[in-house]
Image 1 (cartoon, rainbow, N blue to C red):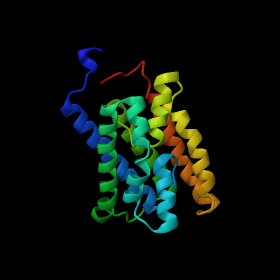
Image 2 (spheres, rainbow, N blue to C red):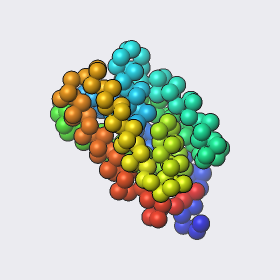
Image 3 (spheres, helix red, strand yellow):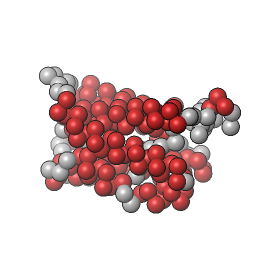
Image 4 (tube, one colour):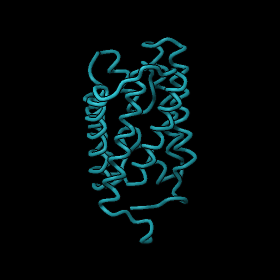
Length: 200
């Protein structure tokens, strides 16, 4: 580990705030359009659509069981950072719809924007030793242990979530949503590599 790749507490704080904020912005775009996504956030979106419960509280609650695995596999520091990121995202996702609105937003463009913004958000969190919990914890663990990229693990989970989404949304909406999820995973798969970026 070199000094040039070590993150200070301030570095981590801004990275986690940026990642959580952009992730919440991405979810605001997604839910405004009535689209779905994969990963743990996608499961929370589906539950939110099916029950009418807010995304923020559902997302926060879904992540609770994963922290134990995160602690055992990734350590206490990772879990604390991830808990903070999840809490920030959940809270911001609750208030952002009150602070911004979209007069016009094409669903296809919105899906691509969601994917790009969310991919960048996840990269920021990963590079500062955090994630958005859930599948992200499992994906990062597999990548660190086996080299199998986090993006591909998340993509496999996405397939299952999108299959369930077909029971709540029409095929056209799910297809547009899949575009957004594809962009997310491509951003992560291409850019998140231990041999390119290693930091504490």
